[in-house]
Length: 116
Length: 112
Image (cartoon, rainbow over the protein chains, first blue to last red):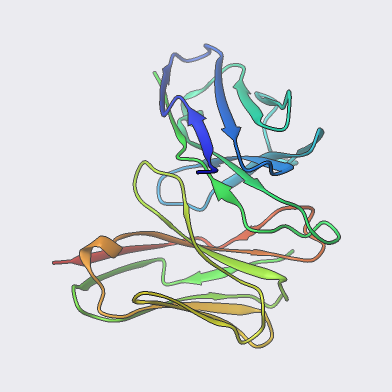
């Protein structure tokens, strides 16, 4: 089945120690997203790629970076995690239609990040 | 700024009762999605509605998109403990730069 896969499902890191989260998709969608979600809140968009074009949200801290080496993979790098970065990180994909409008987004299972 | 107001934010009811969750906006959207999320998991798509006035049914769940494409509702009939979770609505516009506008979520607890 086509899907969005995230690894690892659980990540524990130390304060200030860089961490990389990965996402892969078999849907062949051209848009990939990274969200941060804290307890029982709506996901907060960090950035997204439309093909290789990177779009950063204005309030996404510089501490968060992303790479998309090809259509299938996307990485989230947190350069110096703080305690406030502990959250669920969600990867999603969608296909594009129309003038910038988005079709449905499909989510991976998420990576739960703990910062000690 | 486009906003999507979701209500209620929290709902705890007994098994067998009916409930409705609302998402409202003053903006017109091209589509609206409903997701359900369980603790420790990613949101799972329940439905996408795209046509004004559209009604979709998924077993005991009924989804409606407003005639003007500004609002939507999710109605659950005879709720069961397995319906417990966080329900999220999210809407897309025609000029949305590939992003969704998210409701705040409804945390639903169904007690046996």
